[in-house]
Image (cartoon, rainbow, N blue to C red; front, side, top):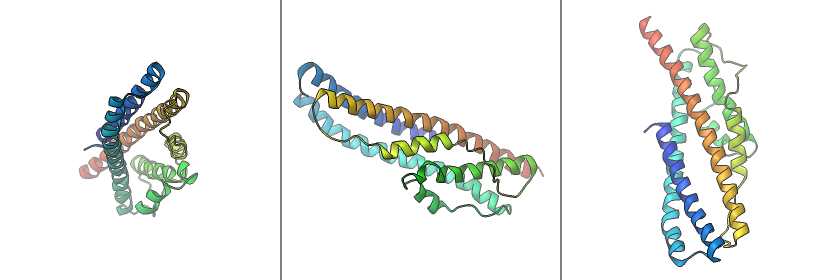
Length: 200
């Protein structure tokens, strides 16, 4: 499955989970407590939803990186200098603060190097990458540092927690849209380079 499809599936599941939380909040505000039936549904449905959402998101991330690193392999085979490896880039995504810019800059360097190779035939690593994923990296770093947990059934707390969760959801969705567009442009470039090579 494609990066866009897997990512969309994960966001639909996250949104469904937020919807169940919102349903519980409405009951607390109107009736003073979450009903037994609603709590049972939440306890039954939300864990599988969360697990499936994480699996879909992880799969989409794997597809994203595998496609970028396929471009990296192409450039390496063409004699372009050495790029950062898959594993060290993957680890960088989980390091607080560093994950704001380190892995994203590495991906942007691959993209910019391909663009230079396509336009000029240069086989040197681009040192002046345009950092088109910088905003995505900042958003990723923020969402990795913020977490709202707890099962407190009190209207004010649940409202704040749900608002934060929706805010993080919206921020993550924005990063997904940007990343999808970025990957599409990268794949357009690599396809053009491969086709030009086959014509030659």
